[in-house]
Image (cartoon, rainbow, N blue to C red; front, side):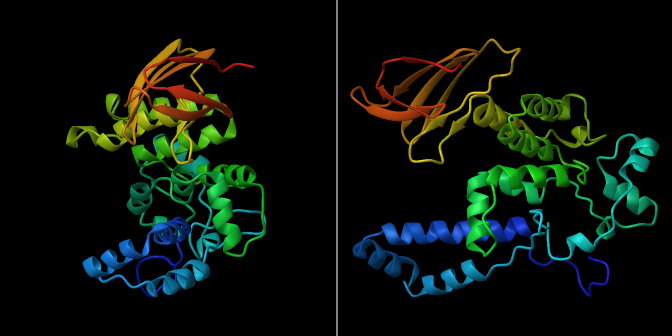
Length: 305
């Protein structure tokens, strides 16, 4: 509950509203791609009417995201009016401040009064969408065009200082976002901290209650999306490897849309083999370079300039 608010909850959470815009835009793309027969079947099955999309468009255009003049996306409406927390004081006094919410409540205070997050909130947007996608949505909502990566970096720098990472998944989110900043050391450190969550019970007593399956999957996501650099969100699968400097080799198999990608990655090259049909041809991009893969045949591509 925000200070002075009559009820619980917040207004215009940035992550929620940006993702709703993305969802409605994707829904419109799907509707536009359907034939008249498909739309007729959809109407018969779920009662869908094409006129409903007019309301979708209105919602998409009018959703509110609060943003400062220097490009900081406000976590929600009213967030910037909250008090700053003396993080150094609490780190010095308690050491582990992952559960800052509990620390403040034990003092008779409330985390609701401060710019403090238990885990990644606004930055979650950059975990599920690329900087280009986020900035594109913000522009369509009426904000001036800004450099997508620059906006992401500003928001990372702002919110990382105000997040206690009381959730193990928060570290996975920050590891993925670090990949956009060409900061391998930072991404590696977040990855290691996420890996250590259950091994060392870094949350202070939560592991005996049950291991964190979400963060386990998240660390695999870091390996796939950052270390191997796989991006299936584009029309053509893309590979932009960032293998940790002390890893000599990484081998894995990924199945996507009935195609199996056999990946053998080292520091200077990547070997790709696709399987699914003997005569299949699958276009991919490796570090921006267009490559055509043939079913069952291995291609070796250099990844160092």
